[in-house]
Length: 390
Image 1: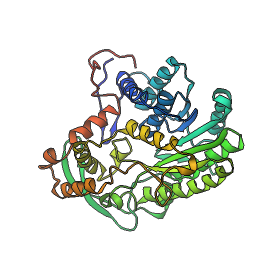
Image 2: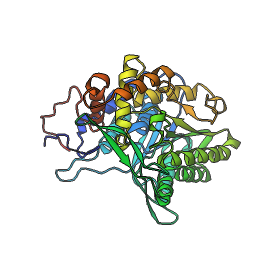
Image 3: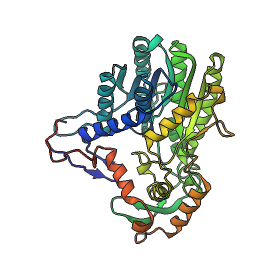
Image 4: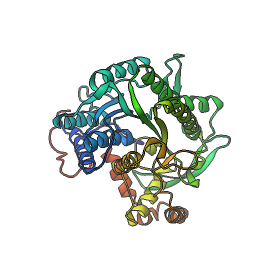
């Protein structure tokens, strides 16, 4: 069958296997240029797209590491394509195994206790020495069934305390409009922290440590975002921001747990990029399209793979105790985004942004291109009229 992109809001409901494979191959070519020391045995929780996928590609293709990836993705069925994450994972496994690397993908609910047990068994049987020396926690799930209580929790993107009003853009049409989002309830705040906070990350690390599945001086990372003032009300100071505060608190607990063997937990604050998650956040698509314009003009734009390669190089140029961090102990991979010259230019463009000016002052086409590439569309060299086995 031929596959075309079908969108519903910020979601593309189809994915192209050849396009997704081409994305992974392009990321692998970037990662192969990495030099220096790095991890040997890597577990990535939330490994099928975005920063999680980029970490797994960098570890495998850049350092020759054995990798295990955990993600919950949908296989193809009938005339329905698999998810992009399913195709991404399959492509990475094929590339890694052609190079003789251990590459194991586990399609399961990362929140489930059974998944943790299954992964530990796989580490013991597949990883060098039966231990992981790097654990990446990059889960961005909308829902969580709590393995202790059995309760179901859903995350929301809402402000706290008062309604949020601001500009946003429909990146499909280029129409800029005002958006208003009602404040979250206390239950919604609590549920969002349960889903997007650090509790499950802590439980993963406790389970791995208890099973003796962590190498000495093991490092673990989770990802966060802070962004500029204009996004704070809906993000940093909203429900997701509360979850990220919890993530940082759990990072400190994990660091205390790992300290006796020389290990450490980090929260890496990353750059704003087009992902399935970021496309759903009001204001952010407009901000990113302006940010892309400014950063590309300054030749400092990075995609997920480039940024994670830089993070790995920073991480492994130092011992865990000496990795450069900010005053809160966070790795700041958003350093280029948050440069004063970049933010001042974005702020000036923000004031001018409307449906008429956007084509001239923003890189909305770059945003659209990156969005469709997430699902394997718009990739050079792919024949989208060809029949494809999904």
